[in-house]
Length: 224
Ligand SMILES: [Mg+2]
Image (cartoon, rainbow, N blue to C red; front, side, top):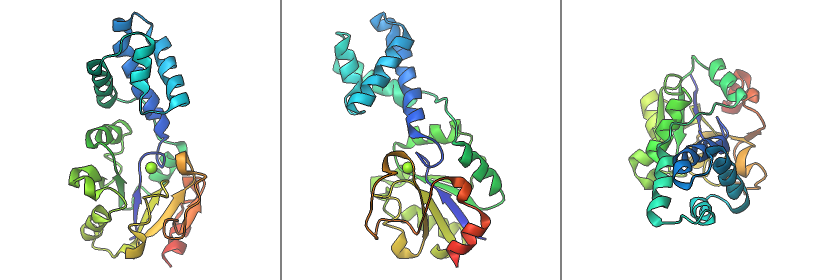
């Protein structure tokens, strides 16, 4: 039976919803220190991120309130990374996981391993996939495009790469490492890379706009 492997961020849920959930946790933490209501702070952090990006968001907000310190920025980052997120799957992801519930399903995701593990738990995915591979657990060099964990999936399922489909959104790294080995690839056009034009080596075998397009017939055609 074919094996379906999914990326996590922006493939199964909107990453920005996790980011905003984290910002609300940071706002709740900072509110008593700054004497500003948490809702006001959260709105300010979200606006700052939208304008300037994520890199310096806590520095900028603390400076705006006259409370910048290296220690407080670090504390904000901890509050963000350790928060228990409240967010949910894309509705088409929910339907897709239900549709293929009897198939061998996996996740492969890069990023901070504890953060990613909390997302998997909060989204209720642990019970819906055979295993969530957090590449970070195998070392930074195993992040995509490295094919290592995909090869672990083949070994575990006793299948060749041409029976394994990876669905992801990040055309820069999701497909380029595994395509030469024969893995089949599907790009979902959403998130930051939705409009990114890639060369042939980076582009997936198929592009879809919704996981509703991923059906048993679609898979059979892709594996042909
Ligand atoms: Mg992604």
